[in-house]
Amino acid sequence: MANDHPKMVASFSYPFVAFVFVLCMSITNGQYANFNKLELPQGVSGPESAAFRGVLVFSEGPFTTVTDGRILKWQGPNVGFVDFAYTSPQRTKQFCDGNTDSEKGPICGRPLALSFHPVTGLLYIADAFFGLLVVGPQGGLATQLVGGFKFLTGLDIDLLRGDIYLSDSSLVYDIRNATQPGFTPDSTGRFLRYNPHNRQVTTLLSGLFGGGGPAVSKDGTFVLVAELLRKRISKYWLVGSKANTAEVLLDLDGNPNKIKRAERKGEFWVAVSVGNQPRAPLVVPRGIRINSDGVVLQTVSFATQFFNKSISIVQERDGKLYVGSRNTTSIGVYSN
Ligand SMILES: *[C@@H]1O[C@H](CO)[C@@H](O)[C@H](O)[C@H]1NC(C)=O
Ligand SMILES: *[C@@H]1O[C@H](CO)[C@@H](O)[C@H](O)[C@H]1NC(C)=O
Ligand SMILES: *[C@@H]1O[C@H](CO)[C@@H](O)[C@H](O)[C@H]1NC(C)=O
Picture 1 (cartoon, helix red, strand yellow):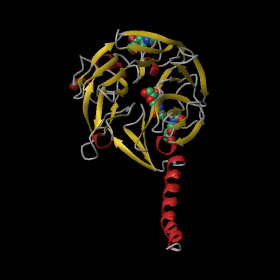
Picture 2 (picture 1 turned 30 degrees about the vertical axis):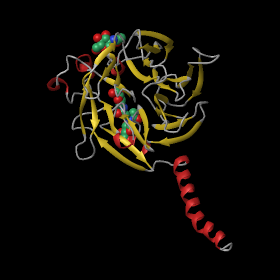
Picture 3 (picture 1 turned 90 degrees about the vertical axis):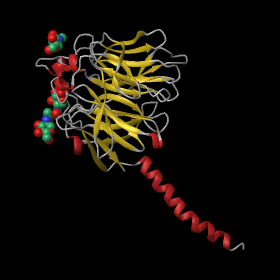
C-alpha cells in the first residue's frame, strides 16, 4: 500500500500542476492573441463604451453608446445590436438613426459612458449634451438627473456610498467643437461628485486638461481620474488622512481615456491612444493594466486591428477585453 501512494500523487499531480501553470500563464501573460468583432448595425459608428449587466448566466451585453445618440444592446451573433435606450426627449429614429453628424447631438443626444448599478439594475448614463441620466431595466427614454454640462464624458458609481463620480472635458467647448477646424483644447475639465440624496453636484478637481476616467476603486477608498491631454492619471482619495486630495499616480506617453476596474481586485484597465492632439506618431492604441499604485502590470497593443485610431474604453469581462472607439463601426473583442 505504501508503494502505491507516490504513484497516485504522481499520476494526479502532473495534470494538476500543468493545469495551474496554464491557468496562471493565461492570466498573467495572456497577450489576447484572438480577435473578434461585434459589428454595429449598418451605417452606425462610434461605439465609445461597453458595459455589462448582471453576472454569470444572467450576464447581458455589451451595451454601447453610438454617434447617432442611441444606447444599443448586443443580443448575440444572430441578432446583433438592438435599440435599448436614448437620452434626448426630442430624438426621433427617422431624424437620428444612422447619422454621423455631431451637429445633431443637441437633438439626438450623444451618450459617452455607461454604468450599471449591480443592485438596482438601473443604468446610469453620461451624455455629452444631456448630462447625467438614468434608465430602468427595460430601457427607453432616460430621465435626466442633472444637466447644464458643456461636455460630460464619464461616470462611475461608488457602491458603498451611492455617490456618482463624473468627469467633463471643458467649461467652454463641446463635443462638436473638438472636430471643427482651428480647434484648440483648453484646461477647464473637471472631476465632480453627484450626491443622489440631495441631488447636488460638487466640483472636486478643476483645471483638468481633458477630463476622463473616473473609476472608483473596488474598496471605495479612492477614484482614478484621467487627464486625456495632459497624459496622466491622478488618484483622488475618498477616505483616510489624504481624503479629498489628489496625487499624480502615473504619467503616460499616450492619451488615457476611460479607466475601468479590472476583474482582479484592486486593478484597472486604461484605454490609451495616440489621440488627435498633441499627436505622438509612435504611440499605438493599447490597453494597460495597472494596480492601485500606478504600476503597469501589462500592456496589450491593439495596433494590428485599430491601426492609429483612438480608442476610448477597455472593458474586461470573463477574461476578454472589449475595446470601444469613437472611430470604428464595431467593438473589438480580444481573448486568449
Ligand atoms: C461649438 O460649436 C457650436 C456648433 O457648431 C457653435 O455654435 C459654438 O459657437 C462652438 N463653440 C466654440 C467655443 O467654438
Ligand atoms: C492612419 O492609418 C491609416 C491606415 O494605416 C492611414 O491611411 C492614415 O494616413 C493614418 N492616419 C494618420 C493620421 O496617421
Ligand atoms: C477619429 O475621429 C475623430 C473625431 O471624430 C477624427 O477627428 C479623427 O480624424 C479620427 N481618426 C481616425 C484615425 O479615424
